[in-house]
Image 1 (tube, rainbow, N blue to C red):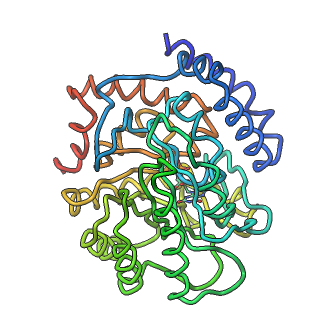
Image 2 (cartoon, rainbow, N blue to C red; image 1 turned 45 degrees about the horizontal axis):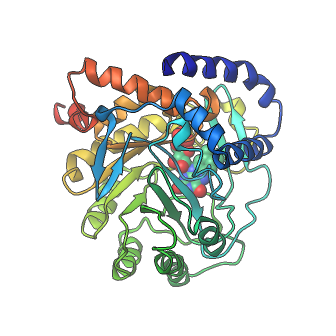
Image 3 (tube, rainbow, N blue to C red; image 1 turned 135 degrees about the vertical axis):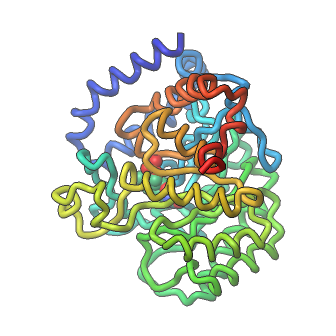
Length: 377
Ligand SMILES: Cc1cc2nc3c(=O)[nH]c(=O)nc-3n(C[C@H](O)[C@H](O)[C@H](O)COP(=O)(O)O)c2cc1C
């Protein structure tokens, strides 16, 4: 029955999409967030949507680091940076969701345009630069809320035109974690993400070089975090640079890594150059992330899979795309852009499709398929 409702949802979205795409992307995002928040607040609307769309199956269930995931499809950081969607996510089929990226101090966002559509490239231009209300406001909003799925908080360094030294940036990130930790019982979030790979920030601070990454992880480790920590990884590093980062990460109490953040290569062959030239600032999500993200998932699984749980992210528009990442080594999947192009029913549709693909592959559970392609290569 959910298949019928999901197909109907997809058709309705396909009809509405040209109209939605007439309007400024950020405005549409704000409208859809307001609708999602409204549905999330209403038990009746939530239950109706859930009954029509949500797909449940033991095949999709996994437990990692003490967290139970009813399915492997999550909302990636960047969509719900005001913590307004945590209640609607399970109703539309998500198995988990990340709020943020959140920083110590609030930031109004980089100058416009900071969000755009590259329809031919099946991508979004992103130049928000951690637009967010700051950790204190987010903690206040989430205090006392009950979550039906695991909810994580993505943390990054405060952005803005005021330059920070490397040491100040580390202290800033630590303060954000400390505030979250102080409120760990009042806010029932399940995991942290540490975003070290946003390409849209001011200044020269970076956590890619071994020395800087080591410094950051040493102080974060000293915090003795109460929740598992996942690190959001860049896409634009070579295999060797990625390996160097992963070996430092694997030496710390880090639960896993997320591959990956935005595509930073404006000349990536998957990008339509006429679309790219419309924007001077910012970087690209969606299909232009997919190929390299898949390569990095395979690399990480092969060399660090026994130590790190891998979350695959980038260009997931279908169950087949998600299944590919699972077979390469991802235990969980995150996404944003696919939903913008295919519709809000996509997470549930992917879950339905994944069940079919896993059964066809002879698997009783998604965990059995993780890394199957990388292991045999
Ligand atoms: C509008 C938008 C805002 C984003 N902001 C963040 C962010 O704040 N933190 C982060 O870790 N990633 C951010 N990202 C990157 C996504 O989390 C994800 O890594 C990337 O878009 C690839 O996934 P996708 O192809 O499914 O969108 C953002 C992406 C988009 C589209």
